[in-house]
Length: 301
Ligand SMILES: [Zn+2]
Image 1 (cartoon, rainbow, N blue to C red):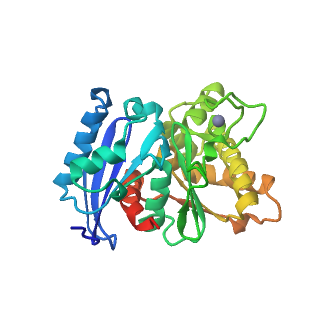
Image 2 (cartoon, rainbow, N blue to C red):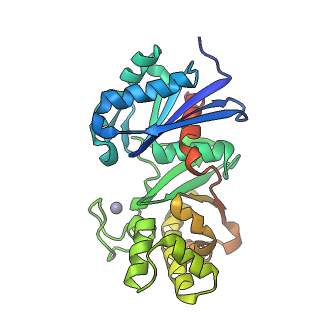
């Protein structure tokens, strides 16, 4: 039944469901997208996912990325603020039933982790031995590739780098701590910092002004980048990392954050030179999630 030449992945987000089919060699691909309409409930979302997979000619395994905490043993999402109706819903079992496959053929993973897998397989971090991928959006997500494989830790929570503490006296974070990296360097945080400084809070506009040579926007983005670098330095000291990949919507301003990231990395790490770090841009955009999800089956032991 299974056709290993074809892989199928789903990126389930708060507003949309992206689904794709990709050849195992990464060359041919086809993608579909529909609205998630999460308010219609988990069964309806599950129906839509299964329908998308079938429309793409689904056979074999199916990988899904979800913006939440995953319980692999039970095959469900335990904490998912943007998609609350699917919390504790038996996603693997229900999808397997609709697609006439076994629950073991459905792979469930956190969205930042599948994005890391996608970028490592076919994107900006292709072939890197060790890399930390960073998604700069409303919050900051992270995915860790060690020895060419996704590292998820003891309970799947590895690389929750948004909650690395950068400044213990900083703003209160949604997690309850203070000065987490995402309270200082996410898109939301950068926009707030710009507004507080009397600057344009729209990050695209702010970035354009910086690129046009305005010094205040340049300086603000350098400071935001420095806080990001300070957080990443902690991963450097723990794991001896040299390579980082930066994506997410605010990743489009990487050219303006780069100098600050280097400053922060150097300031908070030991025994490093600035040119020992490589900061790479993500290249798959919003396709990283479903492509990485499709790859999940081939990462399984
Ligand atoms: Zn936090």
